[in-house]
Length: 352
Ligand code: GLN
Image (cartoon, rainbow, N blue to C red; front, side):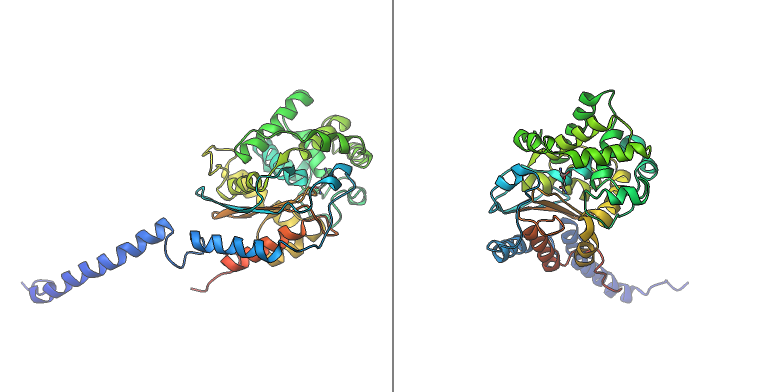
């Protein structure tokens, strides 16, 4: 019987297989540890990208602090910090990442995520809506047009409705739930900026009107005055760029905080949270943002903006001057620059 491989041939093939196995192994091992020179998320590439963005935009004077909440006009407009945290917990920062600003609308993401976690994703769709309004974040017309439907939890009406839906017997219990979820995402106990809260709470008739209009359409699920107050307090929570990047990185990592390793929400909750950010995270400029970055994101009138690169990293910038839609100018420019530089737009697909 003839052997399947002649011994002399086998004598050549086996060493060749061994050599190629040796060559292939380190490449695979490198890929796993993320250290190949082509890795867009290598330490060198990330540090270069955030440094370049910082230097490019640090003297940009476009935009102006929000002033319809009086206290926000007094925040230092020169605060400018960039933080990027990878899904495996590596932290990169540039500039001022310790100055605090109020989280404002960025908080809406995490209260929405908690409601999804507690009641399931269908509840958000049925009781609030998941459609972009295409209007300003505090538009009353957006509520009136659709009789309280077809809004979303990332504009004021939907966010006040989220506060009304969060579990808790009374507003004290609901507040604890809200502060706990925001803190778990940030990986540390967050606190309220009381001057900002008092400033907005004393001049909040528009949000109160929105809450009452929702109630009139049976789309408010707790007392409207208390729900608006919960929402206002939530918006006044203090954060810095690093906190916001940790919150974004927790979403990027499927709901587990990559810094504290704590499971904050389920991967399914993240799956339903990111699309709302993609369609409505930057108010009426959400389309322009998503078209140019491909990243689900959320801004706030305090000057914070965070974006999520799913499975890869969370990024955040704090810089108070805003454009006409209410989004931080430097934050938008910096994150767009970094996404392009690192080539991490999820829709940039290399053909097979
Ligand atoms: N607290 C602010 C408000 O209700 C939040 C708005 C925002 O960040 N876009 O107007």
